[in-house]
Length: 380
Ligand SMILES: *Cc1c(COP(=O)(O)O)cnc(C)c1O
Image 1 (cartoon, helix red, strand yellow):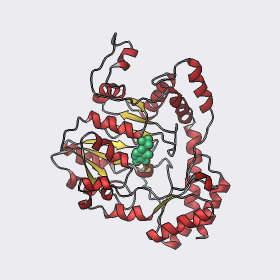
Image 2 (cartoon, helix red, strand yellow):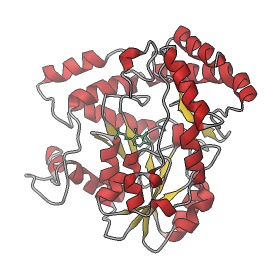
Image 3 (cartoon, helix red, strand yellow):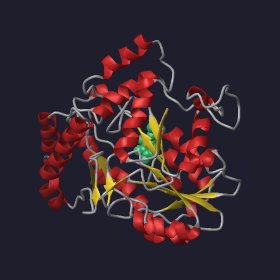
Image 4 (cartoon, protein in one colour):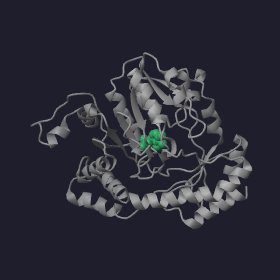
């Protein structure tokens, strides 16, 4: 991939919203920079209060939050986890790493979310979980999905990397699955460079999740004064971020109204500026059903063909604007094929993967830079 510096308008860049550096200095001055300090606690409380989830735990990434979820499922060899083929690698890899076989399912052509109509046919006696991804923060059809999984006794895990503050029928994304994973990677709405969170909706998992996150020890209970020493009681790893990162993140989460206001402006400016052009050129813009509130994570174009998608990337590049495609079908990847992915029937994923293009989208994208992007597209 080309470096960002070759472009006047990058695809993404991190930004300071206000108090990030002040809070980070505060951590250093406090004398405790390791994990689970005061800013981590503030992030936990903020996420729990805002979303109404019983327990939120910051992690080093969304990938790691998904890995904790995989460990909590106690997967056995041969167990299957259903994942959309159109998603980031971690949605599948986190479960494969802990023993599962991924079963790929196609996405809907409108929202690009897991196609719930195909779900029941993918469920077998070995299915342990379905991982839903709310693409662009537009909610999957959770009502029918939950109905099917409940009937089969299968867990739902949400990869909600795109969807913090998004809602499905008024309820926050990340509150539907027994567990949900958030990302605070630099490309997401709220960021600390690299980071994530595990949301625990089924409290039966809460105590063990804490142990897994703390190297398999009951150190969290020790710090709360609930046990008088801590020791090795389960498997685990090191999944808690430094309080320095939590401080950066807290400043961003605390400024969520400002961040979301600018992202809403950017998203709706793209929509207004490109609707007519898209209609004339056979280009499809994001579909947001009326029962979904989306958090303006990304804005994409679905071009009529791979050739036109590549030509538009080159056209924008010549104007020093970086636009990027998105996921390659997991079922056709080298790893996906090892799990029989080649036989998975995911034509929509393949179609979308060839045609989707994401436009520059970051919290401090200026109106004039965005106007330049829109104008360059009109010139295509
Ligand atoms: C960004 C992303 C991830 C990975 O997040 P990290 O925090 O980088 O581990 C996982 N799933 C989806 C859908 C993502 O967009």
